[in-house]
Length: 167
Image 1 (tube, helix red, strand yellow):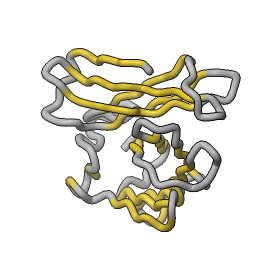
Image 2: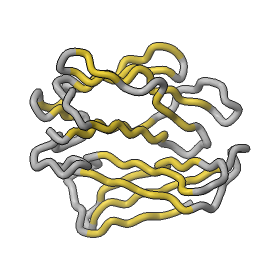
Image 3: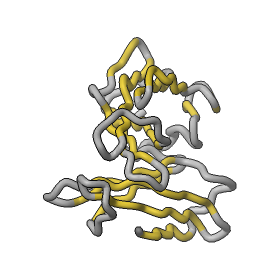
């Protein structure tokens, strides 16, 4: 378990997006177990696991974004579940079956783009994108976010997801 502090990155509440990715030549995965915003900045707990679901000590990358695109655009979505052109609450998550959901980012279909997803919570569940996202008119559609338990069975679990464009 890793405690990551990002001092000076102060928001009024949990806002933006956090992603954690394992860096290892061996099978490993990381996730955001806990995330909070305090008067000093962002505080994030990262857990990493081996293929058996046991805690695993590995390097990882952590990405936190708030009011800036990963591509460096000046005016990307400024808060969680915010679509820059449409305002708060415009994005949608549609559960399809256990462990499967469709996510729609309206009016975000601009190239180049990038989608990132990271499971959240204290267990060893994990999520992926399957298949890759597509564009439908002016919308970016992620079909599907697919989440698994450690045995590989589909499982409902929390996750963070972000859509980044050069916009």
